[in-house]
Length: 407
Image 1 (cartoon, rainbow, N blue to C red):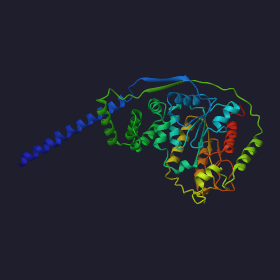
Image 2: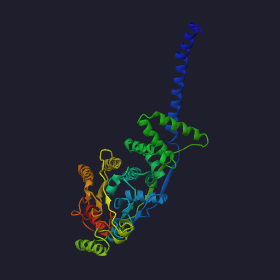
Image 3: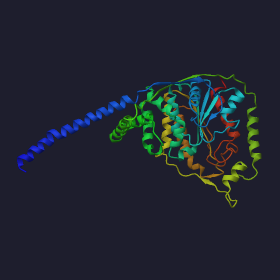
Image 4: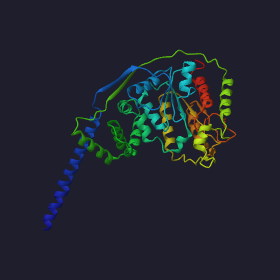
């Protein structure tokens, strides 16, 4: 091949083929962008309306359909009602706040949670109800054990952050984009752990990829969306609107002697223990603490890395949201049983960090954590980490004095 031919081929390549290819890529990218940005919002408005059914009790999760979602939204919208978020300490026991306060004082209270219900899923639930969070009475019962995990797991996320909630978050323009990007990041990082990703989840994941400049992931996701849409009409994200009709209870006076009540509950628990000196109820002790040889298998608290702690970052974002939206919020920091757990003092830096964050924002809290046996109040827990009647009554007094006593 002659030198002249080589020059012609180079010119053709440099001045025609490369510009044409780049232009094609830009046009395709623009089309994908426009398609992704417009297609995702197409869809009808879905209205969920009806009577507020739950003014007391607990939803262990929110998989029960529209009524569970409506009751959750109603609890936050109803400024007379208290919404309590927590995890494995939530049971049907009569003295749990969401049972005791309504039954004894006529204070409407709804509990949300079971094991692994942690800061990030709570944040996402509240984001879905962001228009009602201002001045809403909210209490979050924190467990130190959350901060020894890798953050909210995908099973809990799916149970509590329902598809309607995701759609509501996508459409709600008043929500700061940093929260939407945080959800998108979570979905992106856990994408292989979900059994399926809804259109709303995919949209938020794409938002995160775009914000982070992760164009390859965004283009791949958009192309996949376009290929699938060839077989289905569209992938709309519905605009969810909740319209609960609120109910209100009649208030009652608290006539019991508080000190006598507390002393009685503590003594009842202590008297019931016959098998151990760990302040753990007998059934739990025999099932989980005593090994096959009859020896006590005690737990140990590990050192915690607060510089690389996903749950702590989620907690900070949750507090940021509650402060920004002016929620009437409070926190309870649960203890662990230092008679069972060795090195409970290793959590002191964590507890100090949590309380400093809450103090900075002037948020009320009840700190029940005890790093030593001497500091522990026996009976607060019924086992090694779950609240007993005595502990719940402490929380009931805290919540009543904070939200209702002087009204």
